[in-house]
Length: 206
Image (cartoon, rainbow, N blue to C red; front, side, top):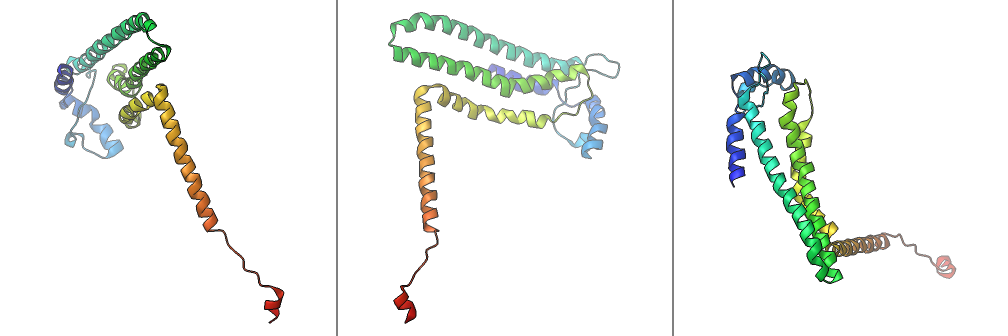
């Protein structure tokens, strides 16, 4: 809750669009999008001013986000390492099946840490650190930020793939669906097969 407030309030305060940001983006927005930047609501992170000095108010947003990410990752790494060593010593008293299940859940947790790193934090890190290089780039960041919506789905898929019971249930369900589709397609093909009617020669001559 504290980090959510800190991220929302401080980041919004530090990267508000000011007069310098409007002038910085105004020409670019008119040339590429035919829009007046002063009429757009949003945020802007401009790292340097016209003299090349750091604009500390905007940079404080990057510092704030970096602190939040580093603090959270430190907790995650500490808990992951501690869980690994304590789990290895305690699962020895469990049966092989339960031991295997605990290891599967641990792998699930590790992958669930890697997934938001790729889909959430990596795109955000590029966005907040790229202004410091002062490069003239035109990158389609809308595509990269769309990866933010993949995380909830990937989080569930990780559990279904790593845990053996879930994986087998998913495979069985998938096979039943495929078999049902094959039966449905076969019945449709049989119903659409053309039939021919033949008459005996005696009936034909009459």
